[in-house]
Amino acid sequence: MNLLEQQIAYYRARAPEYERGLYSSDEAQALIDQVIERVPPGGDVLELACGTGVWTERLAQRAATLTAVDAAPEMIDIAWRRAPRATFVAADLLTWRPTRRYDTVFFGFWLSHVPAARFAEFWELVANCLVDGGRVVFVDEHVCNADKETWLADEVVERSLSDGSTHHVLKTYIDPPELTARLADLGWAADVVDLGSGWVRGEATRA
Image 1 (cartoon, helix red, strand yellow):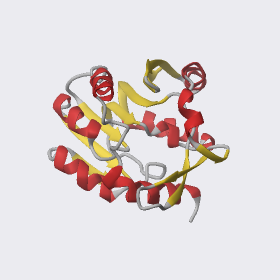
Image 2 (cartoon, helix red, strand yellow):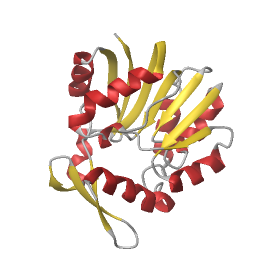
Image 3 (cartoon, one colour):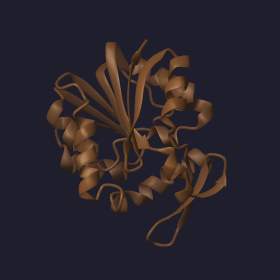
Image 4 (cartoon, rainbow, N blue to C red):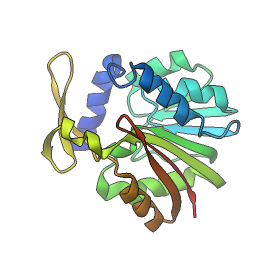
């Protein structure tokens, strides 16, 4: 099993306990509200890596239509209960291709799991998901959180679940100025800001 396959297996196993810690505080809920407010109301929205639907539930309240993609069916099962009117797609985001275009693409805590070698490829995918003038909104973890991980190699961390199992996951924490510059090199006009509490919010359009 390669590292990307291991990452998917980890999130499939983690689905029942995914929200412990990350989203449980009042501060996190306030940050979620701040991020969602940056998503343009109405229109067709695509969510990549929807997870258990924490973001999906709120996006569904703003979007005319919502399509949510995730590689873990176990995550989708939970997300669907929160946002039953969304259309869900079970697929590996690094191989999935869209069949239509959207006004807004959103992803929460996903970009930091994209391998550096496939960064440009991923943003090409995002571009192919957007209508002309469409917008990307995302949230992720600030580089200040990197020292909390058990690093095995560049981009590879080891994580444990409550059953004691250990898993290897791809991870690249977000430095806002560095990410802004990398996106500019790929033809994106991006605004990536530190929200505090270890969270980063980004917005991007094609330059």
